[in-house]
Length: 293
Image (tube, rainbow, N blue to C red; front, side):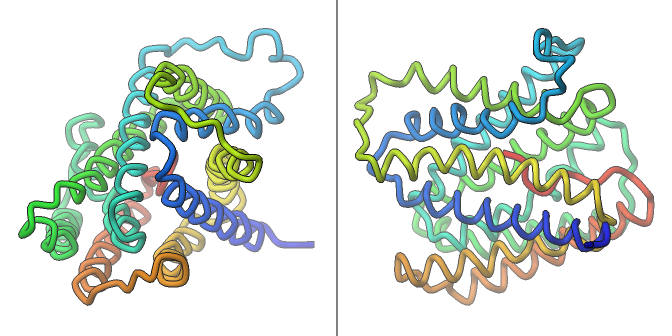
């Protein structure tokens, strides 16, 4: 039998793998409109969640006392998801993943205004280091006016608010309900883009597009399970494996070789988020969710 920490490691590892595979499929799906891919993310993302609904909640599982906060969480999540999809299609995979690690930086800033938290010297230092890392990674885009570099940053902003909203919602709402509302809202809103030249997929494409939703839904659930079984300090560093996977997939599938600026900037962003992570642990506060889409 596995120990709780071993189970936590396992769930975090397969969560990172699932998110990485989802990113690869989204990048591959550039022939399909973003709205159509979002529909598959929402529709098939609901499937894993349905198995978690308790039997005594089948008839009223959708009831909540905090609909407006759910709405804001879903809106921020949708903006983040659209941004990361556009970024993945137009930028190297390793570049997008590197910048996405900056989400805890923005979560720290948002926590000042939304949670009335006090941020000390070390976390402000982490924010500064993280911003320098983002500038280093994005410099080619800034110098060449490549506006696609703004989309991973928008993703970080959206994901940061999602982390704050989930932190608030988790005090009263079950994880499966938070996930259900998000996937359902994606499915409904993206459906209204069907007139934007949706393409009838082949059987293979249908399978791959459906995996965007299934992998995204499972990755979020596995991430939650990881934090449930293991000490957060042990499993959170595993999320940086996503950069290794991004470099490997980018190189073997799209012949993408990360530049030195990307690697240096990614290192600064990782150091920044790790400082924030350690300070959160020392202060014994709830950690921001590393990725929840």
